[in-house]
Each structure stands twice: as structure tokens, then as C-alpha cells.
Length: 227
Image (cartoon, rainbow, N blue to C red):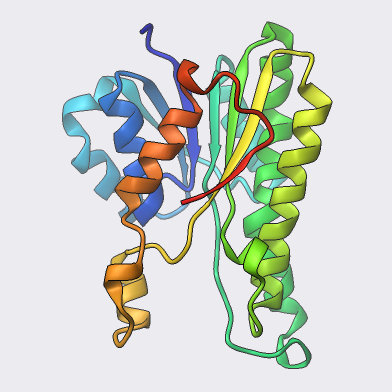
């Protein structure tokens, strides 16, 4: 298969770096925005052998200008994985400050909106493109104490479904994955007493995302797939 231009936002994080690895392993060219220099350097070191196919762009995609800058560095993007995200929970609604709502909506929803506004016009002009949004099972299960997180991820699910309807006749596919708790070092440190065996390895999620972005999933549109 001809190498594609793939953009992975959140690509320097625990899940994101695994997504980047999956697409690089498939022979694709990958563009990753970054805001943390240490995370950028770690990703570059991990994929030093693929340096010619990995482009790291300093850009905050929760900001319209940052997303536009990313778009200028990836004008031929064929695949977009919206992987930027954040988590906060454990408090009932009346004890959750508006700053938490603002942060989670910006990370989990507005980052995807800003990036889509930057990259989708090019996809539409070429009548070709694939979008995969990283939602969460909390968007569907909606547990107590996670109102801000679940609402922000549920909004991303709604975005996925509506956007697919808007671009259905224009050559673009839009889907989402909804992972449960991801088995990352940060989550293990945060929940040391949890049963890690029930968590999802990032590699499993990456397999599903890469499949959704592949021709094999050409008939899958507007889906939200639990992983």
C-alpha cells in the first residue's frame, strides 16, 4: 500500500505514541504536534530509525492558531487520529469546578474540532480521508463522579456521528474508538490497587485504530467501537 500522510494528535502520550508506532510500522508518514519538549524528544528517540517519515510540529491543537499551524505542516493529510485527551474525576457534579469542565472540554472536544477545521477542508477538496476520534467507554456507561469527563467524551461521540452525516457523500469516513481504562504507567501509579489485567493495553487500541483507517474498514462509517 502506498504510504499515507497520517496526523496523530496527542501522539507524544502513552496511547498516542503507540498509535504513532502502529502507523510507522505500516509504512505511513506521520505528523505529530507537540507541546512538551521532553515528550517530543522521547518520541523522536523511540522512532529514530523512522526519522524520515516522522515529523514533529510544535503546536497546541486546543488553540485555533495552533491547529492551523499543524494544518500548514500537513496539507496532504489522508488520515487524522484525534488522540488529544485528558481525565479528571472522583467528584460529584456540585463539587466539580468550572475550570475542570473547561479543561476537559478543551482537551477532549475542542482539540478535535480545531484540528478538523484545519485538516478537513483539504480532505474534502480531494474527496478522500479518514478520521478516527478517541472517545471513551465513560461516554456510554457514564459513571457517577465523572460528569465532566463523560460529558466531554460523549460530546466527541456526537461530533463523530454528526460529522459522518455531513461528509457521507464526500469521500470521508469518520469513526471513533471508545477504550476502557488504558494500561499505562500513569494509570497504574494513580490506581495501584486496581486489577490491571482488566485494563486495555495501548497496542490493542492501536490495532483497532489502524484497522479503522485502513481500506479493510471502508464500509464502517459513523461507528463508535468499544475496545
